[in-house]
Image 1 (cartoon, rainbow, N blue to C red):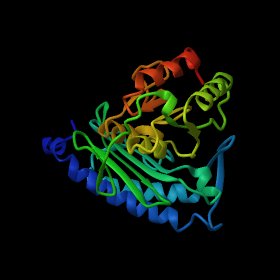
Image 2 (cartoon, rainbow, N blue to C red):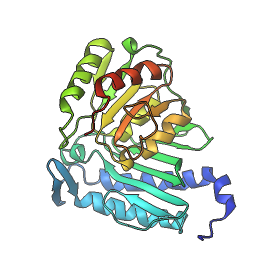
Image 3 (cartoon, rainbow, N blue to C red):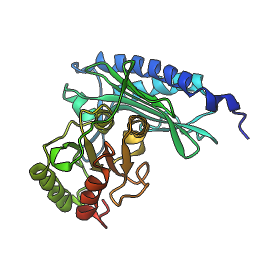
Length: 275
């Protein structure tokens, strides 16, 4: 067995603070390259790109996180480490919003979460352009640059400001997804697509959006946002209203007050669809 001191479970605040520091420094790497052409871009698949800066940033993050919890493993987008932890595993997206980054626009973000067994216990989303750090740890509330945040008080979908994302290479269920988009365009206050799921979820936590939904997501896109949103008073589920949202590729995130109404609409349009 890995020798993980029991005190770690009681010291999540300190782990979160150290993780914030790592994310801030990682963001500096990203910011210094966003409007330059001094890096290599590779295609991992159709419309799926990775840059030299993604890899450089992730390597920095992994090295620094290993100092915080030497026994922890990693689920990292660019696979800088394949180590698997028995109790703790970091979930890392070095640049969430790589397409935005390549085109020199924001938002793009650093997303880091810590999973203890099956539960996310620490989350940090650092939006690079505005230098905004959203962070949370279990039972510690949700924070933005040192100020406590909470979800909005909107209580109907008709008044909701909604965020979503579009698939870039998985189009098997695009038709019902577009029908769902049409529904929210015509029956909610407005719909936005920013290009970073981590930021979308952080914005729901801060009350800037009232709800978010998307499919074809990876764990590192949403892991940090999950605990930030939950600690801010929000709720998450998959397209069926269940709890397979971390590894299931589907996310519905709301301010809680509209969760039942919003998630039931998503289920109505997307029930049985798998992309």
